[in-house]
Image 1: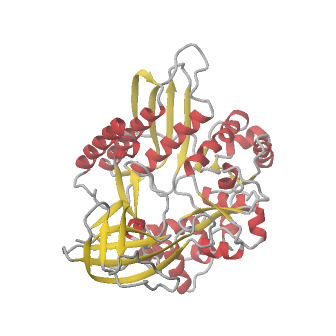
Image 2: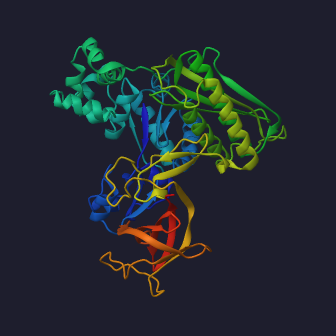
Image 3: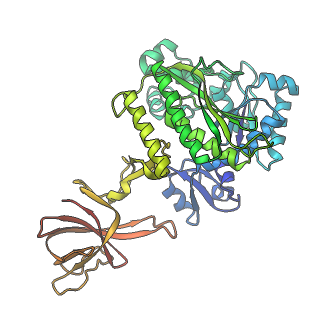
Length: 504
């Protein structure tokens, strides 16, 4: 059985349904209020299209960590009042094995009623769905139906291929004349494996209603669990988070050496007062070390905000043991080799980075990630080492007005103030039609000496985020070459010139 909390990104952000608000990620709408839906805004829609339909639409970036913290009280209520064990698919979506709880409560429908009442007590609107597989149950939850045992293939048969979450495979199948899960499931398994490979075979099993990793009571981890004992007990969440990163790397290294991946993982925190906190996270594609560290950090933050880390007795305060237990181990499908050579070298790199972060702060060690943008500084995002990068602007999308190659050799973290003058010593300006008021003659960057301009190109006007009040940015870029051989990328905003980057 899968429980789906409706519009969870909006609920976690404490947005009222009557407000025109949408939560965004990777340039698309991931959730929107009833007021926004009434204007035609839909989940999956591009931001520009949504704002075109509803100019007053307020946009909020998605916060997975905040959604996890807000979801914890509901999980605690379920475990305390209804079921003994559940698995988090993502914040707002949870799965649980139905056979045992259904026998206890007198059937699947009474179980669904108990779950609904537990959620309603917290003011959360949920839908329940049940089927033979987690994939099918998640689809059933959207319709709020309980699929009878053995009827899952028939329930799935009319769905389009898009629900598989594999756009390239779905597009290829449609071009081959296969348009529904039922038609896909009817293909011979051996032929699907030979034509589409292991990923296509996994999708074929989903379409047939077959589960690769079913919900079980407590499968063996085969001795791959890792733990860290704090002496004395750790009371600082930041320090526990750093240890969590190291644990995730240890676990991933052990599984990598054995050629395994885990589909779900249990996070355990044994408290100094004798309590044990535990939560199971599930991921069908296999959890990487970064994904494990991300979920562990989210879970520790959620336990802190809900008060679970506060001692309940005089036995002591803090976390005594932090443990990761992998479940449902499967052969690794094969991943690309580590960027820094061997796995051992990458493990040393991770330990050094974690130590530096402990000394100088979480953002002291970062990695660069390419994202979409028009200016050189807009196309790189810094992500703290060990954090899972949230979906960003797609770098390969057509960014109209993007600065073409060659790219600058140096991009300043903060643009330097500049002055661009004409022959008469007047400050240059750019008109609304994108024309310079005069030819550039001298350039001063920062507190440097004015240098004669021997060549220039542009300007190129840019009007970004014009549909978002308070975020609109209008500027014009200009390339200049001075007589000392240096080439600069300048921009002008509100009649002020800035040096954005240096070519040479």
